[in-house]
Image (tube, rainbow, N blue to C red; front, side, top):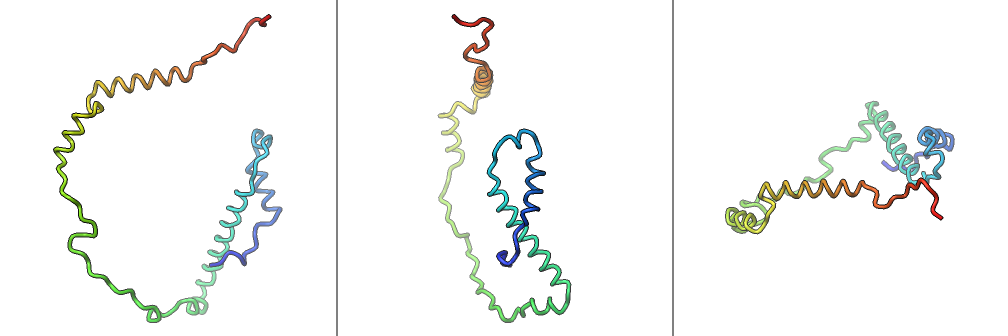
Length: 142
Protein backbone atom coordinates (compact mmCIF):
# COMPACT_ATOMS: atom_id res chain seq x y z
CA UNK A 1 0.00 0.00 0.00
CA UNK A 2 1.29 3.50 -0.68
CA UNK A 3 2.64 5.45 2.26
CA UNK A 4 2.44 8.93 0.72
CA UNK A 5 -1.19 9.45 1.81
CA UNK A 6 -0.43 8.75 5.47
CA UNK A 7 0.48 11.91 7.40
CA UNK A 8 3.88 11.78 9.14
CA UNK A 9 4.32 12.04 12.89
CA UNK A 10 3.52 15.39 14.42
CA UNK A 11 6.21 17.65 15.86
CA UNK A 12 4.90 16.96 19.35
CA UNK A 13 5.25 13.19 18.89
CA UNK A 14 8.77 13.57 17.47
CA UNK A 15 9.85 15.81 20.34
CA UNK A 16 8.44 13.35 22.87
CA UNK A 17 10.33 10.45 21.26
CA UNK A 18 13.57 12.42 21.11
CA UNK A 19 13.11 13.41 24.74
CA UNK A 20 12.84 9.75 25.75
CA UNK A 21 15.67 8.65 23.44
CA UNK A 22 18.12 11.37 24.46
CA UNK A 23 17.28 11.18 28.16
CA UNK A 24 20.77 10.32 29.43
CA UNK A 25 23.27 12.99 30.44
CA UNK A 26 25.91 11.92 27.90
CA UNK A 27 23.48 11.97 24.98
CA UNK A 28 22.13 15.41 25.94
CA UNK A 29 25.64 16.89 25.81
CA UNK A 30 26.31 15.62 22.30
CA UNK A 31 24.68 17.29 19.32
CA UNK A 32 23.35 14.30 17.42
CA UNK A 33 21.80 14.33 13.95
CA UNK A 34 18.49 12.53 14.39
CA UNK A 35 16.98 13.27 10.96
CA UNK A 36 17.79 9.83 9.55
CA UNK A 37 16.27 8.15 12.60
CA UNK A 38 13.13 10.29 12.33
CA UNK A 39 12.76 9.43 8.62
CA UNK A 40 13.01 5.73 9.43
CA UNK A 41 10.44 6.05 12.21
CA UNK A 42 8.07 7.94 9.86
CA UNK A 43 8.33 5.11 7.31
CA UNK A 44 7.61 2.48 9.97
CA UNK A 45 4.71 4.60 11.26
CA UNK A 46 3.19 4.81 7.75
CA UNK A 47 3.56 1.05 7.25
CA UNK A 48 1.92 0.36 10.59
CA UNK A 49 -0.99 2.68 9.80
CA UNK A 50 -1.43 0.94 6.43
CA UNK A 51 -1.49 -2.44 8.17
CA UNK A 52 -4.12 -1.22 10.65
CA UNK A 53 -6.32 0.16 7.85
CA UNK A 54 -5.91 -3.01 5.78
CA UNK A 55 -6.76 -5.30 8.71
CA UNK A 56 -9.79 -3.18 9.56
CA UNK A 57 -11.07 -3.25 5.99
CA UNK A 58 -10.51 -7.02 5.71
CA UNK A 59 -12.58 -7.60 8.86
CA UNK A 60 -15.69 -6.36 7.04
CA UNK A 61 -17.06 -8.99 4.58
CA UNK A 62 -18.24 -6.50 1.91
CA UNK A 63 -14.92 -4.70 1.76
CA UNK A 64 -12.98 -7.95 1.75
CA UNK A 65 -14.95 -9.26 -1.23
CA UNK A 66 -14.23 -6.08 -3.18
CA UNK A 67 -10.51 -6.41 -2.51
CA UNK A 68 -10.24 -10.05 -3.43
CA UNK A 69 -9.85 -10.86 -7.10
CA UNK A 70 -10.91 -14.06 -8.77
CA UNK A 71 -7.99 -16.44 -9.31
CA UNK A 72 -9.16 -17.08 -12.90
CA UNK A 73 -8.15 -13.56 -13.95
CA UNK A 74 -4.45 -14.23 -13.39
CA UNK A 75 -2.77 -16.67 -15.76
CA UNK A 76 -0.61 -19.32 -14.15
CA UNK A 77 3.04 -19.33 -15.24
CA UNK A 78 4.17 -22.19 -17.45
CA UNK A 79 5.86 -25.01 -15.61
CA UNK A 80 9.32 -25.75 -16.92
CA UNK A 81 10.54 -29.32 -16.99
CA UNK A 82 12.79 -30.29 -14.12
CA UNK A 83 16.41 -30.92 -15.23
CA UNK A 84 17.78 -34.39 -14.67
CA UNK A 85 21.18 -33.48 -13.22
CA UNK A 86 20.60 -30.01 -11.86
CA UNK A 87 21.57 -26.70 -13.42
CA UNK A 88 25.30 -26.61 -12.63
CA UNK A 89 27.65 -29.35 -13.68
CA UNK A 90 30.37 -30.08 -11.15
CA UNK A 91 33.70 -31.40 -12.45
CA UNK A 92 35.39 -34.42 -10.90
CA UNK A 93 37.19 -33.55 -7.67
CA UNK A 94 39.64 -35.74 -5.77
CA UNK A 95 39.11 -34.65 -2.18
CA UNK A 96 41.67 -36.99 -0.61
CA UNK A 97 44.46 -35.72 -2.86
CA UNK A 98 43.54 -32.07 -2.37
CA UNK A 99 43.38 -32.46 1.42
CA UNK A 100 46.69 -34.27 1.49
CA UNK A 101 48.31 -31.49 -0.55
CA UNK A 102 46.78 -28.82 1.67
CA UNK A 103 47.96 -30.59 4.82
CA UNK A 104 51.48 -30.90 3.43
CA UNK A 105 51.80 -27.19 2.62
CA UNK A 106 50.07 -25.71 5.66
CA UNK A 107 51.25 -25.70 9.22
CA UNK A 108 47.84 -24.90 10.71
CA UNK A 109 46.94 -28.58 11.03
CA UNK A 110 49.54 -29.25 13.74
CA UNK A 111 48.47 -28.67 17.38
CA UNK A 112 51.87 -27.20 18.33
CA UNK A 113 51.59 -24.49 15.71
CA UNK A 114 48.04 -23.60 16.73
CA UNK A 115 49.07 -23.42 20.41
CA UNK A 116 52.04 -21.19 19.58
CA UNK A 117 49.86 -18.91 17.45
CA UNK A 118 47.33 -18.54 20.28
CA UNK A 119 50.09 -17.70 22.79
CA UNK A 120 51.61 -15.10 20.43
CA UNK A 121 48.18 -13.51 19.94
CA UNK A 122 47.65 -13.42 23.71
CA UNK A 123 50.98 -11.65 24.24
CA UNK A 124 50.18 -9.19 21.45
CA UNK A 125 46.87 -8.37 23.14
CA UNK A 126 48.65 -7.78 26.46
CA UNK A 127 51.15 -5.43 24.80
CA UNK A 128 48.33 -3.57 23.04
CA UNK A 129 46.71 -2.84 26.42
CA UNK A 130 49.93 -1.49 27.92
CA UNK A 131 50.91 2.17 27.89
CA UNK A 132 53.88 2.78 25.62
CA UNK A 133 54.78 6.14 27.11
CA UNK A 134 54.74 7.29 30.73
CA UNK A 135 52.37 10.23 30.78
CA UNK A 136 51.88 10.35 34.56
CA UNK A 137 54.52 12.66 36.00
CA UNK A 138 54.90 13.25 39.72
CA UNK A 139 57.17 16.29 39.26
CA UNK A 140 57.07 19.06 36.75
CA UNK A 141 59.75 19.03 34.07
CA UNK A 142 62.05 22.13 34.12
